[in-house]
Picture 1 (spheres, rainbow, N blue to C red):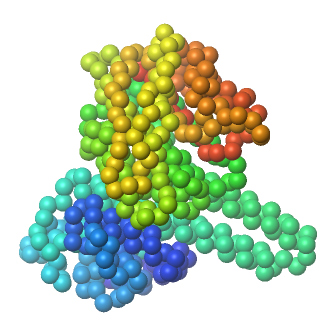
Picture 2: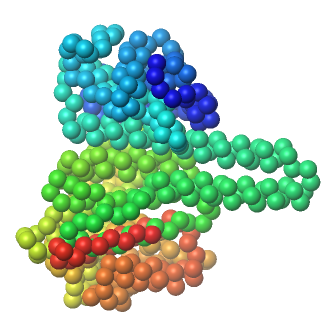
Picture 3: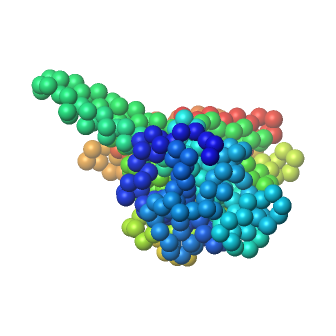
Length: 440
């Protein structure tokens, strides 16, 4: 079988260890449940061998441990490795298509290691011919990216742990140990920073008629974030999401990557802001699998209003702090918070509020790192503090000026302490030729 040598990458990421079972099984289950396929399967390709890492139907039934008896996997992996990209087959009975194990329709998407080598394939299998819709292809691409993200995360954690063990083994005296411990702390922070960067947009897109400023600040402790934001094109305009995943560290990073990817996949094909967060809820409910966790999010679906007359916006909220609206005359108000945190119960509860942004009006989306900022032993900034900070800002200023003014007010209140991750996104309606974006 053609393909890169992946044994070292699979071993380095510890993908065959038992502690990887749960995360990989949930991703295989999502592959089946979100597409309606008979099964979702993750295969690993190791030195020409194909290993079934996890196979799940939409109800979670099947094995989560590796096995090698899989003719279907070999046929599908060979097809994906031959082109180095996703392969979608609607009827394997067509001439020239591989047929194995009674499978008539299948989709296979490559999973990569950190260097870009294909080390596995995420597949959706069906026993009847079927059409893979654009939405289903987006969803499968998102899930394959989530598996690739899991590989990167496990590799980074394994490398950091190996460094810690090496430091402990080779420390000859207390001074040497202290030096190595300091170097290890810096290395762990570097890994955390790398992972944070991979979970946030590399750069913000420029959308006509929309000026955007986005700010992210990591909380103390150097842990991997649970807050995220993104901006995406939608069928009729643009979408902006800000979310907060319960917890920090590797588990929160996995959930953050899946949440951001899901919003991108659904938002690309669905204009309905409530439907986007409802879809995210469904994915997270399966992902959490009765574990005590949750996420909150606010999503703004934006469409141009006329040729050059601002924006029509639907703001969907699921247990998240309320968005804040500033009119160009300086009037400031908080929208209605609503909905319920995502992933907790089987049914979604999302609140949607329509807003018109005239030219110069702006909308602020943020996480509770803004409103819960506080000095040691002091009170929180709260929504009232945010409203006051926005009122004190220049309503004629650009989006970046507003973002910087708000965070400066937060810093003053908290005496410089940044205890929690903080995300702030400011969206300002401008003339169609004046769009800009800035992010830090």
